[in-house]
Length: 131
Image 1 (cartoon, rainbow, N blue to C red):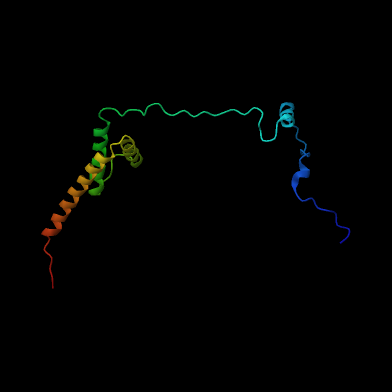
Image 2: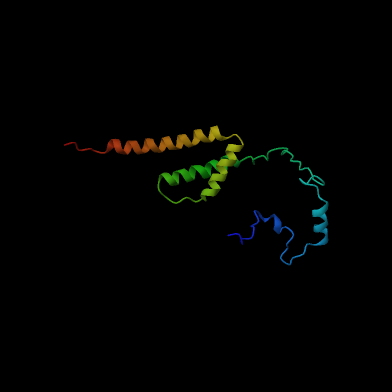
């Protein structure tokens, strides 16, 4: 046990070894002259706010509502949707970001209520047999 060689605790002793690779002179000089913490030539990053939110086209709200209304009706009647779900999602997101969400909510709620009312009537007319 006395013949064991002492082990090195970390890899800091390997810093000088490059495994046969050489650094370009500019990188080697920068590594030697740089201050700890990278204080020498740091640059500031300035983030500017967006000036104005892009405006929606005049008929965007009406066109988007027609797409959504058609899609909801297709879902309610179990038929295929003409539009991509991602496109519909982005359309709703655009309307909500432009503060049209209360109107959109009212319109969607009305379409859903109309559908439920139509379905309830069909079940009310069905003759249930109670035994």
